[in-house]
Image (tube, rainbow, N blue to C red; front, top):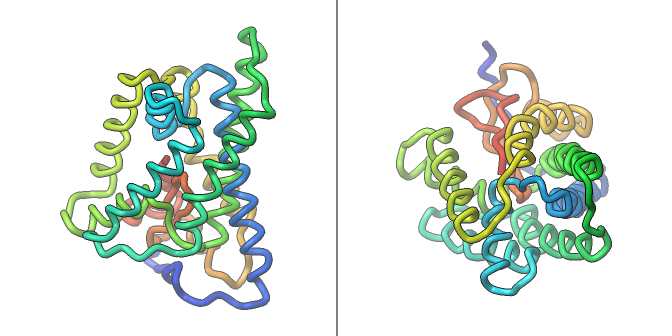
Length: 245
């Protein structure tokens, strides 16, 4: 098995790719917010962190997007003792996804009937995979939640798989207790987002930026993420292992 490492996200990329990388970053983050809104409107279950966001929104009266933004900023504060350094993708994650979600929730109506709900759920999951591929391939640094995960991994010596599992089980359980939606969509998202993200990482790869190495079969990669929402390559499991937000 190859053990070739990719360059860290902070390594300068060719300037000629910068406009495309910026477009992918912000298009991906906006699409992530939109796809999350579709899952909300489907009523069949949300991604793990959005279960918590929805539960907190129900209890506080704030919109889900505002809760997502506030919680992302609070998680980012936890980077300080972990000595994590935010990048453009990190800050953009906090600011863009929540705003895009709230705007989308204003535009997308509730649907009724299992057929319509299932269609909206499927669209949300697939578009979330596309969004993940877009913003990770841009390589502007990890999102707040992924930086927390990798920081805890470095400081505790525990596996990323264990830390990620503990974090996500905790946020789902807390969100469900607060009234967040857990259902078929939550399970299908957990099963589908990895393969979808891996496929679209390859599809949106920018030649010459090093992103292709992230998804090369069997490659051990440095943690790459952004977004948000969320998603990173697990250095302990090789490339192809996409960790859900």
